[in-house]
Image 1 (cartoon, helix red, strand yellow):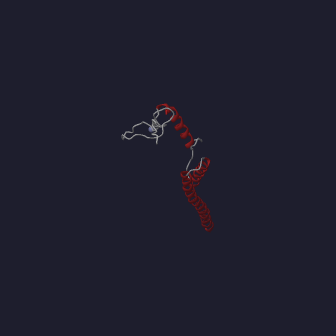
Image 2: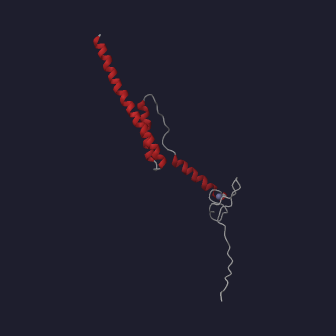
Length: 135
Ligand SMILES: [Zn+2]
């Protein structure tokens, strides 16, 4: 003889009750005893705000504001060098690695420009001196 098992199962809905403007339900996991997820729970509002502030502070450099005077390619190199150091000072991410590669690429080109400018200046001075000496 087979006994029939009669258990009453109460299915507890653990999904967020928030209804999006599209009419769809959020569906993310609820927090604590709230009927909402972390992002939609009114009781998590302060916590969310504090987390955003912490994230914002961590993301942005906390150093002094830039006060660079740009008058030559060499001045740009100083700024790029600073940007590279700022990149290394933060946690490594794919985005930062790409930024670093881009900065280094521009930095190399800038170094070439500065070197050529310096060599050209020496050549110009030598030519002008030779012209002066012939007079
Ligand atoms: Zn939600």
